[in-house]
Length: 58
Image (cartoon, rainbow, N blue to C red; front, side, top):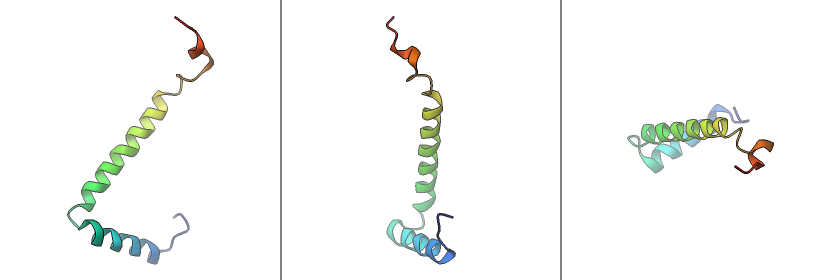
């Protein structure tokens, strides 16, 4: 995963727990997941907006 071993992932998780606290991490993960989902949905919905037909004036 991203060229990281289990030691590096454990270290990142440990730093996250120390920095944010164990009660805040699930909340941060949930909000990050919602942000990624919204970003993907926006990319999918916005595919037709920048096409050649969008240059026409109504």
